[in-house]
Image (cartoon, rainbow, N blue to C red):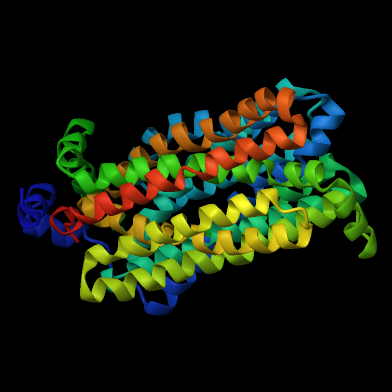
Length: 453
């Protein structure tokens, strides 16, 4: 099916399309909305990732194993996040997207703060489930709104700016979480992480605009034009690019979330004396020092990588839209050996430096992949197709990644020790860069014919 025929099938009549189409917004407001949504994404990332810097302290206090840390870091958050993605995305496609975002923000912020009251693994696990329930309503409507605000020539870079909220939130989650935990304990760190989202929810409720017409007749027309799941499946079934990128991201997330969940624990175990000495030299404890250090690495290098990837994608697309996949493929391949050397380096400074370069190379795909995902389907299917992508990515990557790394670490620890087992487990997850590169290049072959916008 050609791009034009797909658009024609999905669109309402010319008259109704004119009535129900999104009204024009000023460039200044569009920029404000992208920034606001990015800040919300930062808060989501803080609340999702603060547990990673606290993991080793929580593990010691509650007497947990690595697989339980993996469960709290991945599965607890991801299982309901993935399960609720479909109904929330359908609500976003049919209703008021800012209202969905604001409601979700309140829920996940409250459960993050409530994590400070957990007394055992089960309670903390259930609080992390609540965070996942809330954050399920953030990504699909946010990406859908940005795709409406930004014209196609700036869509990849706009979505890259929004995606940069993930590493920036990781920076703040690691740094603030570690510093607060050092001084006041891990429970206070959860409370501090959850509070800003409640204030931000009020700002978003007052200022974030829905671009769709809210007239009763136009809402009814939009609902009538809402595709069913079978219709979405028929469109996506022919989109080989979509499935290649979807599988790629799911596999990549195993490595991303596995490393993220255990990187602080690894340095605490493998470089105990060095980290303690470095922390003491700047007046910090190990958790605070690693929180700031790893936060700066993942935040600054990650955000720079995501924005650079979006910039490269927009430039490369001017010559050939398919070239947007080259930098993500080769960047991941280059990051893999750097990660290996960082994990085996005896000098902690060298290890952290190499890890910084690996982070810089590893995030080139966020902007390009999101842009292509949004351009593959008609506008009235964007949130639902994004939700499907998130469902499978989270189910395979975020839910399974930390758990698999933790299980493998526990298994290998009996032969190589706690630090050695975790090192080998993280190396195995880093090697997934090879199949990811293959999938990027496979998606490149079919991009041109699959895009509809």
